[in-house]
Amino acid sequence: MSHSHSDHVHPTSPPATTHNHGDHNTGSGDHMMMMQMTFYFGCKNVELLFAGLVINTPGEMVGACIGVFLLAVFYEGLKIGREVLLRRNQVNVRYNSMPVPGADGTVLMETHKTVGQRMLSLAHFLQTFLHIIQVVVSYFLMLVFMTYNGYLCIAVAAGAGFGYFLFSWKKAVVVDITEHCH
Image 1 (tube, rainbow, N blue to C red):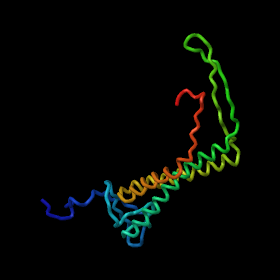
Image 2 (image 1 turned 180 degrees about the vertical axis):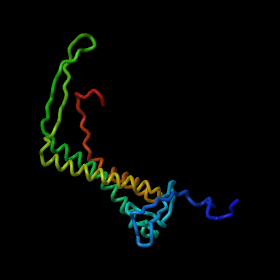
Image 3 (image 1 turned 180 degrees about the horizontal axis):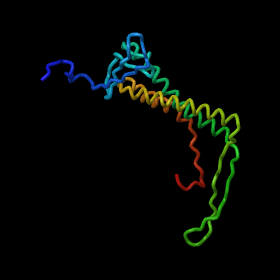
Image 4 (image 1 turned 120 degrees about the vertical axis):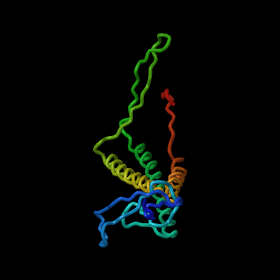
């Protein structure tokens, strides 16, 4: 029976796992970082997105939360901005009517709206570039949330909510009277 204190876990300490990042040599051997696997509120040794970006003080945490909040607001603005840009650059709007049999044997005409844009256009290249930025930002926000730090998770959620509040009201909701599934 071992009486070593190295295996003792304090009930107030969140469980953690170690990951050996041997390729991040800091000059003093391998870089070892504890990764939280449960939600916690702390400001000490919080690694944020990159190996060299470590939060150690409450002031650094406040700054990180503000930055993450603004990144989430930017993400929501980018989503709505891409929709607005797409609507502005739509071409080839066509209305196709086709006969559809009615319930009592009559023939009804159903109209479908088809909207497209050209593949080799400046607008499509811009949409593609903005899509790449949106995907990268969304993964950054996901990785920030996966730190399991409560402060950073709240900053992501609050920023996304505030960004939606700021930008989504501009989202045009067009009701197509020929649309049957509302």
